[in-house]
Every structure is written in structure tokens, then in C-alpha cells.
Image 1 (cartoon, rainbow, N blue to C red):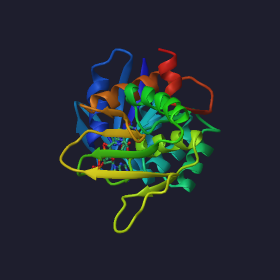
Image 2: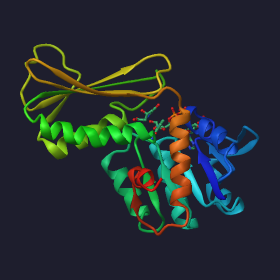
Image 3: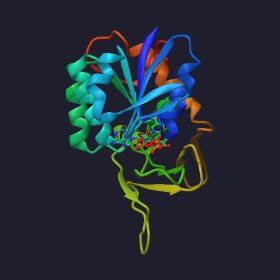
Length: 252
Ligand SMILES: NC(=O)C1=CN([C@@H]2O[C@H](COP(=O)(O)OP(=O)(O)OC[C@H]3O[C@@H](n4cnc5c(N)ncnc54)[C@H](OP(=O)(O)O)[C@@H]3O)[C@@H](O)[C@H]2O)C=CC1
Ligand SMILES: O=C(O)C1=N[C@H](C(=O)O)C[C@H](O)C1
């Protein structure tokens, strides 16, 4: 049984992690963490200001984080101090924050994924193959999310862009406007925010007479919760290192 602390337990995604966790046999949701104290699905939620005590008192094996970059970094430091593994789903880190997280993985195991759905992970594998095979096609990347999302483009879109750039030297152009003729080595990147869209991503590869569209749509946040908890169970007890979600999928 893996004892989990859910950081962001009162949020859209962390709340789903708590709900999913209390239903699982391989996970014990020991505690939730948020800005303020509260409760979710019968699980006590404690303020992040008490994180060090919380990790020790509740005998936590893995912290699962869907919060904000700032909160993640303070939780990561506490995990390193307490010897607690960390699963990070939060997106929107700048380069310095990403480096700080990587440093924490020298002390405790850290698994970070911009998207915990299995479908996106497979999409990423297909993207690499497609971009390599259709190496002179125009590329455009689109994502859509709910109106409460604060980072743009999404973490997943940035990860897809990285995969594309591993295969081809393309320069991102974010949200064209005005006189903006297309260069053959650019990739347009577009973010839409509306309603409660769970998360949609699409990469198109367009030749003159055909368009290949690679797309994914999350239909329920439960898909992220399930993946993050699978990752937590997989990560518990491993050596300090930097891990990715692909390894979890490959092992299951
Ligand atoms: N990797 C993946 O698969 C996915 C990643 N995400 C990412 O997860 C993150 C959260 O998204 P979402 O659930 O929509 O966000 P919400 O705004 O709905 O929830 C944020 C949560 O974080 C808590 N929080 C905010 N500030 C702090 C703080 N300083 N200390 C402790 N807790 C804090 C909030 O608590 P309070 O309300 O008390 O402030 C709340 O519980 C985003 O970065 C998003 O991109 C989302 C879905 C899937
Ligand atoms: O904020 C969200 O909701 C999501 N965020 C992640 C991202 O930024 O890619 C993953 C998913 O798309 C939902």
C-alpha cells in the first residue's frame, strides 16, 4: 500500500486524485495539502505552511502534486528533507524552477509529466515518427483548455513541441496576427481557453494535397488522476533519480 499526500487536493485535478485514490486498493490517501486547511472525500486537507510536519506525521511515501509551480518547489524541498518521493503534474515551470526540481531528484525520486494520460504518451511516440517521415510538411500545433487554466501554451503542447524539435529544427510562432507570412521552418502554436474543456491537443502535418492530424482529447480529469496514482505506486521505494511517465506505462 502506497501512502500518498495529494498537493492541490482542493483543486480541479488534485480533487480528482483524492477521489480516485480513496477508491483504490493499492493507495492510501494519507492527507491532502492546499493553501488552507479543509477536507475532500473524507481526507483531511492541511495548509502547505505545515508541509514538513504533514509529511512526517502522516508517514507519507509519495507526494502527488497538481498545484502551482511556486507551491511545487516548496513541497519539493520538504520532500527532499523528509525522504519522500514526488510525482509532479503541475505545469508552467520556467527554466530555473525546472532546474531546482531536477536538483531535488538527487535526493529523492521525482517523476514529472506534463500529461498523465496514457493516450498522450502514445501520441508523443507517434509524433516523433510522423515528423521524421514527413520532414518537409508544414507543422501547426493547437491546444484547448478550460477557462481557469493560467499557463499557455499548455505543458503538454510544450512537450509535443520538444518532441517535434528533436526531429526537426523548427521555430515556434505563437498566435500569429497581422502581416505574418509563413516560413517553411516555423511551427504555429495556438492556445484556446473556454468553458470546462478538459484538455485537447492537435498537431497537423500538412503537405500540398493532404493533411495528417494527430490529436487527443481528455474527456474526464479522472484519466490524469489514474495516471498520477499509477505513477505514485510505481515510484515508491525507487532510488533518487529523474523519472518519466513512459517508464510507468512500459512496466504495466
Ligand atoms: N500533468 C497532468 O496530467 C495535468 C496537469 N495539470 C496541471 O496541474 C496544475 C493544477 O491545475 P488545476 O487542478 O486546474 O488547478 P486548480 O487551480 O483547480 O487547483 C490548484 C490547487 O493548488 C492549490 N494551491 C494553489 N496555490 C497553492 C500554494 N501556494 N500552496 C499550496 N497549494 C496551493 C489550490 O489550493 P487553494 O484552492 O487552497 O489555493 C488548489 O488545491 C496546473 O499546473 C495544470 O496545468 C492539470 C491536469 C493534468
Ligand atoms: O490545466 C489543465 O487542465 C491541464 N494541464 C496539463 C497541461 O498543461 O498540458 C495537462 C492537461 O492538458 C490538462
